[in-house]
Amino acid sequence: MSERELKDRLRRVRAPQETDAAERSWRVVREAHARRSPFTRRHARRRLAGGLLAALAGLGLVLSPAGAEVREWVADVVDDPPGVERAEPSLDRLPGGGRLLVDSAEGSWLVDPDGSRRRLGDYEQSAWSPRGLFAAAVQGNTLSAVDVSEEIGDVRWSLSADAQIAEPQWSPSGVRIAYLAGDSLRVVDGDQSDDRLLRPRVGDVAPAWMPEPEYTGLAGEPAPKHVLAYVGTSGRTARVVEADTGRLLWTQAFTRPIRGLEWTEQEDRLAVLTATRLKLFSRQGRSEESFGFSRGNPALSSDAAGHDRFAVTRWSRKRGRSQLDLLDTPAAEPLFPGPGRFSGVPGRFSGVEWSPSGNWILLEWKAADQWLFLSPDGKRVRAVSQIAGQFDPGGDGDSEFPAVSGWCCE
Image 1 (cartoon, rainbow, N blue to C red):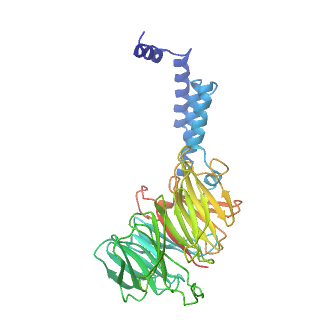
Image 2: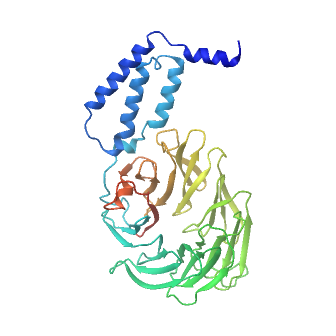
Image 3: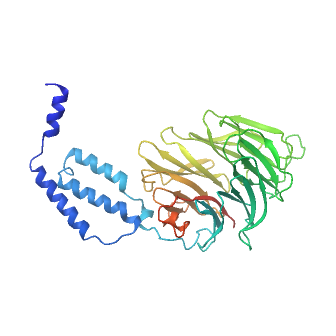
């Protein structure tokens, strides 16, 4: 007998009373569907799970070894973490205070501490000024400084470039804005004067300004005041320059593409994130601490807060789950590791932000259309659902998931 003939015969084999069991299962599911009551979006997957398990039970799979494997797979796919069942339908306040800048397909928005939302305008990206009085906002080839204090949406100035503008970043002093224009890195003063080219070709990672404390250089000379980190054209080199003069201060190469740059708030250390490592450098470029991640569970994004605390989102390729790690110098502690008490099922966390006070972490969970607010000790979880629709009023319910561009200020 050939292998093909054997497969054909096995496909025709039927378990005892299989047809009757299937008909009974379908009848139960059909009657339950007819009696169903309206339900909100966040319950859909759990009800689907119930229907799948009922059908599997009717077919006899739940009692068999193979059925146990299928049941485990169903649980992996549809089981919700604790936050989902408690998800609130709308945002009525921001834990930790402050305000959010949010970029959606319908423009950029300001979210106030009470959860109310105000649209800034038809922008694609936005970023806070140091004290949260203005936002740097991008629309195509135009960069604008937008008032978000009293006259919200009032444009103070705009400038245009020859290429698409992206990733505006305001310096801590407020007197410089760095931005990408196509492949180039440019810097403009906060009052729109002296728009200049800093580097003609760079990587597509957002640049990062170093805090501006009172200190001196290695030989006692005054330290550079406006120091900027960016990624080189290879995508694997972190470079630090004096923005006012263009002088290269130091550079560090990596074996993997760089996913993010950020300076810590208090220690003036540059954190460089790749898929397999979060590495810290002193302001002079000296290699310091390093946190490693497995290739099968790579890092996606990170955010720093306070005294060298980092929130890092990761993705397990094998299990199809996200997780959040809280890295606190000198120890590294996983917070809500998948598949533990909390994990992103299914899909990836698309972003992470610390609150201005450092008492809350905001996770963007696109697959569940939710924001998750977590306390760093993992004891408090607040979930808010229907996020996409809240930033697309009057939409058809099929809106793109928005991106949080910043959480400011105390």
